[in-house]
Amino acid sequence: MSSLLVRAPAKINLGLSVLGRRPDGYHEIESVMQQVSLADVLVITPARRSGVFFSCSDPALNGEDNLVYRAAVLLASQSRKKLSGVKLELIKKIPVEAGLAGGSSDAAAALFALNRFWRLDLSFTRLLELGALLGSDIPFCLLGGTALAAGRGERLQPLPDLPFFWVVLAVPAGIGLSTASIYGALRLDSGFVPPGIKQLVAAIKGGNPDDILAWLAAGNTNALEGVALSSAPHLHSLKKRLMELGLTPVMSGSGPTFFALGRSLRLAGTAARVLQEEGYRAFLCWTEKSSQKKKVMCCDD
Image (cartoon, rainbow, N blue to C red; front, top):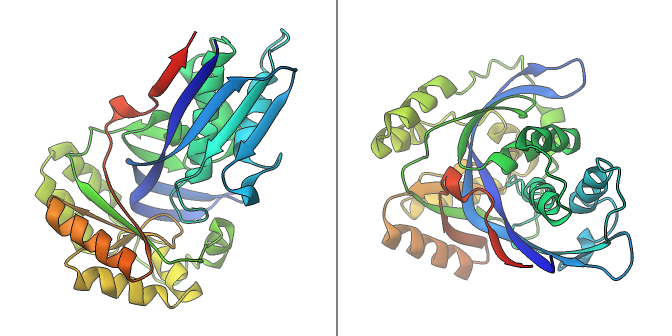
């Protein structure tokens, strides 16, 4: 096999509830996760000598602490035979520290593609287990589509595919929020009422786009949004601007990205263009179905 190229799509949290702190230091969550079409790309080619050689289009992400490299080393440890050397080139499109699971999706792409590249024939269940060792969002990024996540995010229940929505992602330039710091600042005894995730799941199972949009428009969708807004108060202006453009903004994960779902390409496209002109990092993309979870885009044997 000479090369593989695989997409690593971003993730948004349609709803996120934090139920408590676990003995292992993580938080118990309940979240509906959705994959979208904005994606990094991982290119895998043979190396002339043994080992794993990683590079990234963003120099700040080079190094052995990158989840792609760590995923490759972990996967290699599952084989008793000597594996061929491999070069991993990551082309970044997903903003870093934006609540979009870019690093987790990159690691999932590495596990998925290297299992094929090295012909390890590990089961999908085993890949999910390995992913959970590296990060809470990686199992979902392997699964793709729409899913209800529980535990620290690794326990997944696939849900019916979301109806097609255009998605506007808006990220303030030059700002990243640490997931660990946002969770660390969360006060579960503050009287916050957790989002009604069960109602969102029911709306998704019902398949009516209007019911899903109504749930998002009702607010109280993300238990971490208040903490993120307190940590970076200028995010209020981005949320307000999205509303002025006719969108219903929801924070994804620990932020600082806001997303909005819609049925109108004209509205979504105009909003994304205006935000870009105003200096925000804005992306127009769409919701992906589970069948699109990890397509190898090219493969030369």
